[in-house]
Amino acid sequence: MAAQMSTAEIGDGRPVPAPKISLRGVTKRHDTQLALDRITLDIPVSTFFVVVGPSGCGKTTLLRMLAGLDAPSEGQIDIANPQSGHPQNSMVFQGDSLFPWMTVWDNAAYGLKMRNVPRARIDDVVGHYLNKTGMYGARTLYPHQLSGGMRQRVSIARAFANDPDILLMDEPFSALDEQNKTLLHEELLRIWEETRKTVVFITHSVDEAVTLGDRIMVMTAGPGRIKTIVPVDLPRPRNVVELRHTPAYGELVYDIWAQLREEVDRARSREPGSKS
Amino acid sequence: MSSARTRSLCRERAISILSPLVLLGLWEICARTGIVDVRFFPAPSNIIGHLFELASSGALWRHVGASLYRLAAGFIVGCVPAIVIGLAIGLYRPVRAAFDPLISATYPIPKSSLLPLILLIFGLGESSKIAMVAIGVFYPVVINTAAGVRQIAPIFLDVGRNFGASRFNMFRTVALPGALPLIMTGIKLGAGMGLVLIAIAEMVGAKQGLGYMIWNAWELFDVQTMYVGLFVIAIIGFVMNTGFDALERAIVPWRKG
Image (tube, rainbow over all chains, first blue to last red):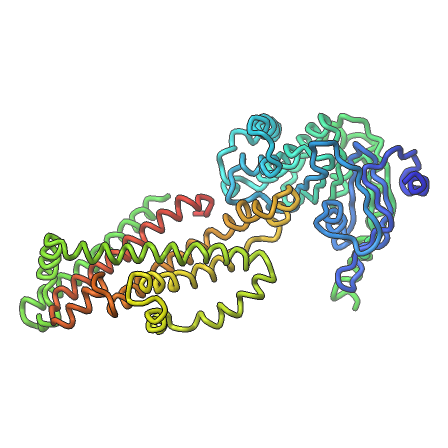
């Protein structure tokens, strides 16, 4: 392991003490199509790690492999063992992932129930996170009675309540309008400050990446490779709205967008109709 | 809800209550004026009167009780394995590979044509009637349950796995509730099929039950009793459907609308 760590030269050059997540040459093929190409990467503990890339670059594939829902075709993923009593990871899925047949409360309590956590503890933890996300008053409702933003808040409460070592978030806010998104960014950061869990967050929004992240990994258009990893040295705790006024924020957004731009253009040029 | 919509709903309900009553009224008039032959189409008032006679003598209740018992027993015997097998077919590809051809091959066989075989295997007693109902219930429930599991969005299975659901909990918290709306559809179809088959099964080799009552009335040319039997079967079907609709609303509260 130590030898592997010394080879970790990707990133911002800062020393990497104990990677929570470590990928070595991770490659994924769907049939013969190369989706991810030799991803080598260390994510330190307590880092809010954001992945941006053009659509189809394998971001979701990467996250699903971290979640253990898919296996890499080649390469190795090492994830530090979770503290005892904690699950290794919980995922906030893209789109509607709340069980339509469960109330808000039962959805948020799902992970804890599956782990047979004592009832009193479930009541505490689920109550806490439903309060934090402002969904406690809606705890007896079913998902179809909620707006998209409310559903996504419950989905976040479900992941946090499960108290995992690592939080995996797959474009959790992509379907929401701008106002809801800003509010949810604030909520997410507030909850995250309390726990400082390791987060891997996927998005196609550069603004979202800079607002939330400690490090931002830009991926190339498919097959996904690491284009660059940019550190975000904006102070925390962050005020989502104030942050946008600062020059440092603007510069970061500009830099990352410039990097991403090339990849988006490349992805576009491959779309049917532009060139065979 | 707007008042215009409420009004049109009320009107629809009134029409659906009135239309059978108007039909019965026409029938009554035709029977009394001799336009139709009362040997074949006795007046509804006579049929109702005969129904009360049969009910007060206790004969009707004996037949209804026998049929309902067979229906209920056959329903449970057919429905429970159908749900379990249907869930397994929907969840596990090898199970599907094993059961799908069997089900598709045997499903098109008219269930009533199995009656002689069932009588051969189970004899003339209760078990052959229960088996007929069970077969009728089994197919729609197993097919709809499997389809119900397969239409569950894959994301819900991912959520179950990601949050550490055991195999049993995948069944209990994802597959079963996710398939429940279609399972209920299967149950309603199955119960209707069960009612059809119990009437047929009781016409052959039974000493009581509504099917027997109707067949016996034919043999004795007791047309009024025949109509009473048909009428009571229709009522049972209607009550069953209403009951399952209410059950569906109670156990599928997340259904939109």
